[in-house]
Image (cartoon, rainbow, N blue to C red; front, side, top):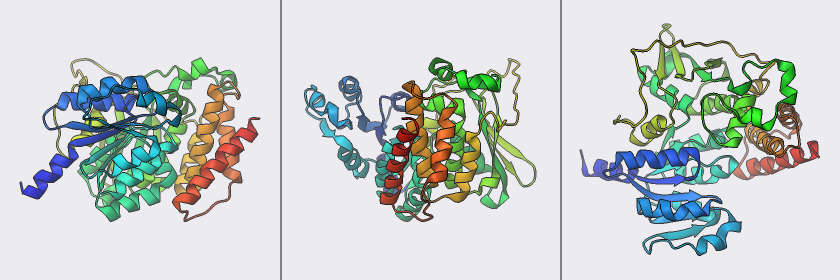
Length: 393
């Protein structure tokens, strides 16, 4: 191995974890704890959970700590952080860490549109971007992938479905891919009568049968908007047209996704549902290392099922194919409208079925641009959120 290769590998093991207090962030910290050796948490961010910061910084001897919520700035300044740790405040602090030349890998684990700008800065800096923030690609897929290509950086997905596709694609070239198949659990309402959905409560929607996730993504799983966003994400990650991206219901969540090649061969990635596996793969790729995740017990009989998606039950999914085909500003509007509608559902202001209806209406009404700048995408994001607030007023 050359000196340049050794330096590059050393840099990649210096990791920034953006969204360290969430489920992906905490999973990443556990993976780095298990990897040990040269792996180091060089920066970590929280939004408002400032109380967690000191213990995380001390445990990982982290030189950069970031609090993005401006309302928590004074509380953050009162923390007794180690003298070797520098505190950065606000989203400017996040961007500073994303551009830090000592950091080689950025784990983008923040939820929502707030993670986009730091993902772009990491991409511009030529880093490995381990992406769990699907909104970055949904909002600005063309811009982000082009930035990665121009800088020579790397984009490795952390979503279990896209990690599975990424791994399966090692088995063949782009021209050999017939289609990719994203699997979906179906969420908590897979067996509900459609007429019951309008009366679904917040507690009903948060009762995911397989994964333990944050509130917003759990609601997205219930509407299957998460799968719509993943269709858009896959379009940009793997440079595929929407007609080559399919979705099937797989309640066991053991087959994480599949690639069908032109000869009819199907390559799938299987494992028990544990996000630490795709997190670790994104950090160590192309190398595989022992992982603390549970393994499949091949001595036990397991029934693996899959079924087609009922688009009447899950109308959100159709929006994913529509936006993946259209591009432009449509992804930013879809994402922002859905985020705002989910927030209002969680506040008890709209019904569960109103989430997709409102999002669809806002998407239909927006002023479409096919080749937007980042500023235009952010303007459309703000507009869509305001439209949802009017729709639900």
